Image 1 (cartoon, rainbow, N blue to C red):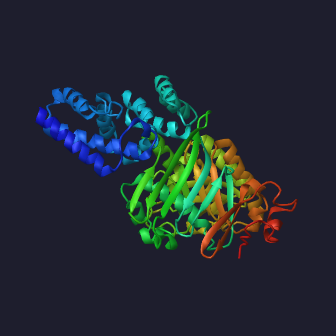
Image 2: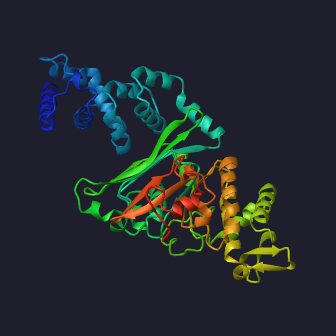
Length: 490
């Protein structure tokens, strides 16, 4: 055993020398020291697997600790700490995302998390909260003892997984070099010219959701490859990061949750920063829809979820059919259709002669002559698609709609914004829209409008705030080029 301990100590000293950091209690809060503890834990784990019988490991570590601390009792290499180093490595070795979070905490806080038998979801929750809320060791211990994780899950389930968007940050996604949106309104309109980068904002969020549904870097392949996603200038510089981060809050206590990703452009390393709670991650992904009705080009190469409306609404009939089986939803949809398009009497989904399900519209002027398929006007089709979108689930949604004004006359647009507001208030949907329609902008308040422009190839955004319209109508303020950022629709 003496020879094995000697071998262990020599290897240990060689490792710490290579790391170039002296382990001591004084480095408890240092990122490098926790990373070093992780590497020491790896060394210990692999050494004992190869050299020590399972039942002898604890005694071996006691003897090894005595040898290591013979000249320095305060080195932080006690028998207890060596065991924690080993646990630290074993707990996070297959979870690099969680390990990065653990590296941010002091060693004493990590020990508090290692003491309890937490599953991965629980551990990730306490890691996130400890970082976000700067919990002390006692806070961590109390929160674990009080089962705050279970309480959190119960609360958000009772609230139907309702969440608020606190912020969106995007860096180096296509033309989005540095976009920051803080405390957005639930109804939010991005107004600007074509090719200003409005759609890139929605596409970046869609990319984030695809990254949550796939493994590795498959999301890049779905969106045309890294070269088609990463900002061109950033791809030519060292040390650049592609970043898409949604900050969300859940529950009455506004538990802050980060849902995002980072991609190191140089090392090609993709790091996911999701909640780590499988059910919650799934709920966030399933809440998201991006819609660009009838735009088949935008719908190419994206994953399709078959119980949701697709980006081009090409599966409208199958989704609407299910919704219309719910009498309450059907009544609400018919009521809204008659407000937005008064000449419509009713809608249904029926099979044609070939057995294909087809959207049927009956107008008040022609009650005996139903319109189907291509006979339905573009505007009517688009309104029905939007209604289908909002009623496709009973849970709150995060919906990004591209240019909903397509095919609609200004009179319908004046009713559309009140409808969308009711969807946010009644169902807690987050509804974000891109537009270059002055008629739609005319119905907005300041906190509902973001002006989008492009300068020197980079998309820029400006969140309007109270007073920006200077008592003018929103569309007049926009068209007069008074609003910061400009972003006129031409």
